[in-house]
Image (cartoon, rainbow, N blue to C red; front, side):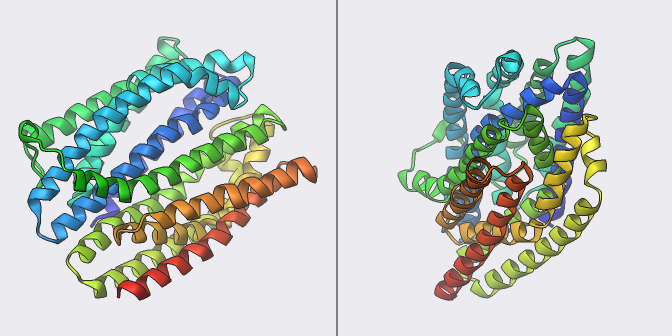
Amino acid sequence: MLTLPMLAGMMVQTLYLFVDMIFVGMVSADALTALSFNLPIVFFGLGLMFGLGSGVTAVIAQFIGGNDKKNADNCAEHAVILGIILGTLITAAGLKWGRPLLILLGVSDDILYLAWGYLKVLLWGYIFIVLSVFFRSVLSGEGDVKTPMIIQGSGTVLNMILDPIFIFYLDMGVEGAALATVISQVIVTLIFIYFLFVKEHAYITFAMKDFKFSNSIIQRIFKLGLPASFSLILMSFGSGIFNRILVTFSNDAVAAYQVGSRIDHLFIMPAISISTSLVTLVGMFYGAKRMDLVKNIIYYGMSRAAFIGFGIGVIFFIFPPQLVTMFSRDSEIIEMGAGYLRAIACSYPFIAVSMTCGRSLQGLGNAVPMLVITFLRVFLFSLVLASIFVFWMGKPVEWVWYAILTSMIATAGIAFWWLRSTLKKVI
C-alpha cells in the first residue's frame, strides 16, 4: 500500500528525468555535458532537503504510532517553516557561489555559459522544490503516499510538456529545461498548499497562526534527518569529484557517467520506494512498541528489494547499448555508458540491501549508520580506489566503474551487520 503508489510517482518522475536529458541531448552534446555538470550541485541541495524530509517522515510516523496527534501536527508545522528558511538560504548561496563552483568542478570555458545558465534559472525557483519535498514528507509520515504521487506526477507531466516548448519552440536551450522545471514545481507547491491548508485533506492539520516553536521536535527532526542529509550530500560531492576524475579522460566520459546514473533510476525507483516505506512502517511499529512486526517488515522489504535488483541487473547487463542510445548517438558516450551499466548492474542487489538497512535504522531512530556507510562507500572505497586506478596505475575509464562496484559490495555487508546488531539490542 505504501510502496506501489510511491513507485508509480517515481516512475513518472524518472520518466521526466529521461525525457529532460533526451531533449537536452537533442540540443547538442555540449548541452548534455553542461547539464551533467550541474547534477551534483542540484542534488547537493536536494540531498539536504530529502534527508531532513525523511527525518520529518520518521518523527511524524513515531508520533502517530504513539497516538500523539498534537505533536505530529506541530512537527508538520516545523517542516513548513524549515522549508521556507532553507529554500531561501540555498537560493542565495547558489546565486553567489554557483558559477565559481561549476568552474571548480571542472566545467570548461566553452560550456560554462550553458552550465551556469541552467543553474541560475533553476535557483530562482528552488524554494518551491524544497517546499514540495517537505509537503510530501509530511504526508508520507502519516502513511499517505498516494496524494503526493498524484500531485508530483501531475507536475512531472506538465514539466515534460513545457520542456520542448521552452527548449526548442522558444529556442531557450538548457535554460528552457530549467524554466520548465521551475514552473512545474511552483504549480506543484500551490496544489500541495490547497490540499493541506484549504481543503484540509490530510490527517495532519496545520494551524500556522498558532505555531509554537518546540526545541525537542526540531532536535528530533535534525537528529534523524541530518545524517540522512549528509549522506545524500556526500553522494553529491562524490558525483562531482567523479566528474572531476572522468573529465581527465574526456567530456564524453562525464556525460556517459551521468547518463548511466539516470538509467540507474529504473532500479533505484523500487529500491527507494521500498526503503522509504520502511521508514514509515518501522517508525510506526517502533512507536507502538510492536517489535515483532519491526523485524518481519524489515526482512520482507529487504528480500523483495534485492530480488528486484537482481532481475533489473540482469536486463541492464544484457542490453546496455540500447539503453544509452536513447540519450545520445555519440559513439564514445554509448561505449562508455554501456561499460558503466554492465559494471554497476552487478551491484544492484547489494545497493538494495544497503538502502533498506539504512532506512530501517532511521525508522528505529538511528540515522547515523546511513551517514557512516555512505561516507565509507563514496570516499573510503569508491573515490580512493578510482584515484589509485586512474592516477597511480594509469588504468582506463572502465576501472572507475570497477571502483564503484567494489564499494557497493563492501558497504552492503557493513550495513547488514549494523542492522543485525541494532535489532539484537532493541528486540
